[in-house]
Length: 167
Image (cartoon, rainbow, N blue to C red):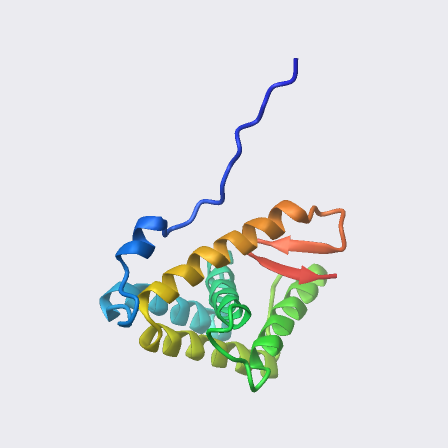
């Protein structure tokens, strides 16, 4: 008899209670997102100026890019300048370059695009309703979990932490 594996849902920081209790029309309190945004900016500083950025630094930057991408996919935000696509491409190029060397590094245009996306995420946190931001977090976690489930290393795409890179 075959053992039945339990159905595992993607673990998220936020849940249904957070969505219900969040304000549908007021932005999130700065005290609730300041830590996350500070860590993302410190990660960006470590990537740009640090000798050897950690995997956590890259994860935090990928999180910011993925969250903004989710907002664009949901139609909440717009990427009129195309910088989101440039930031995704820059992360993919950095990953590909790391295959040859031991370190991931960004190019100048990629660095500018990622900095712009990180600034856009800060503006979204300041202006969007709290419920929308929490729903974006949940949708991002689900979207990334689905990609992790769907793609294996033998497929066309390789998944690096929470960021997908097209081969």
